Image (cartoon, rainbow, N blue to C red; front, side, top):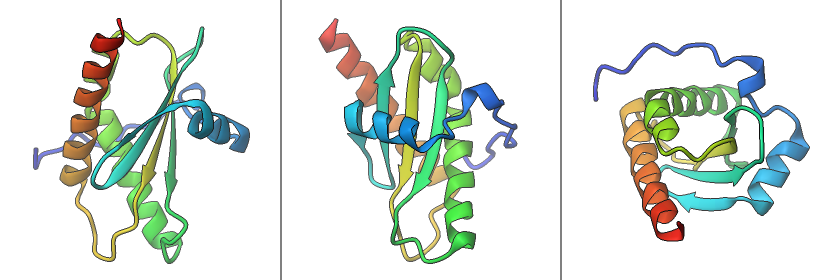
Length: 128
């Protein structure tokens, strides 16, 4: 897990940018908490799989916020194939980084997001 894939650019149609999209996903979506991040998932009827990345309000400055957001995007992209293999269809996903005083590595975020996706897959199997 130490060798992570390079960070590829997310296409515009694969990003959540508007604040109402974030709010809707976080209020109406299913929450899956982890140790380092919280994932909110909202299924949609149609459209692409979209990602929104945010940080806790307690994050001290822009340097740290951008650091955490880069790590979250990298975790998302390293687990993207598994997320698509769940066959959830179209959905919006918001990753919210929790604040930690020392740096959290990209591998920790990848491991945590992978655990969240495994919990999500169990949740989907039970629901069906």
